[in-house]
Image (cartoon, one colour):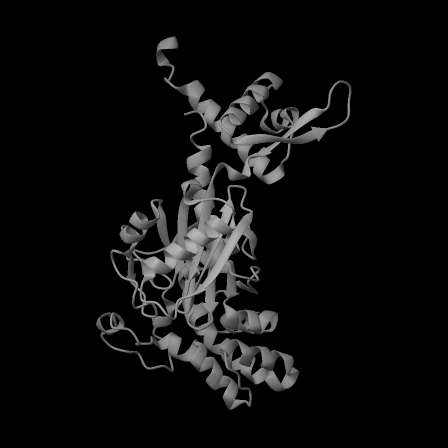
Length: 396
């Protein structure tokens, strides 16, 4: 009956078709109108109307012709790269790296700045973000979102940084300060969570709905992806595995009060963090400025370096095992400088040790994101949100 039709249904269908076409152009383009029609199941007339609509809105553009067949060559279309931009930022205690990507995901601008000589976090982020946009040949008016990957706890409700012991100048209220300063949406994301986003998008966990990422570098951290979604926890503390109580390490008391003042290390951090890794190496005759250097030298040394890998794997396995007997994921990704230095040899040892001390046997692999995973995760997070905004409003 006509009276039962839902208002706005044609509008909704157009929006769904437009979004499907844009996703196809992003992933498989450039494409002709006929190809879009075939892939979406739309008629030639409807596909042509769709392309014209998207072209009028500046979301697609003609990029060439496809020869073949009778009659004139078919026009090829692609998503307009400059229809929107995003900026991802990797914030560390010593430097800030910002990259600007267009809506296709291509990185077109990048800057790196030291943070050692300033106590103004707003100024540091402002300069990095604006310079990244400038390096990309655009300005902040086209930047739809800025996502910052940062150490510490990010409150899931407010989005604020609530605790970052190695970034003492970062404080509650900083998020609003940055939004006012940049005049664009700004979002914080925990750095290890951002690394997991990158891993899920283009790394070893691509296509995997349930996995955990263990970060072993200067510190240790965890990100959990459950049914394709990051699990942040009630306060954003899900993944602060450095504070996991483990056998063989002193468990600090009243940690919540002490941690807010900085400098307090949890039990797992004390046995698997960078200082502990260097201590393991020293015991077996391997020294380095950074923990990753120690592990890298141990791997290169062959049999002489195996005791370093064995002991490091046994320690990391305590954190991995504690996580896996709760979540039971099929995949564990080892990321961070120390993990990368250890490579497949370290991953195999961790996998064997976890299977030895628990009832679960997840596959353990080394990260597939070789460089700047936090930065790339921030960019992926920003792009997902902005594509929803831009592509989801195509019939507005």
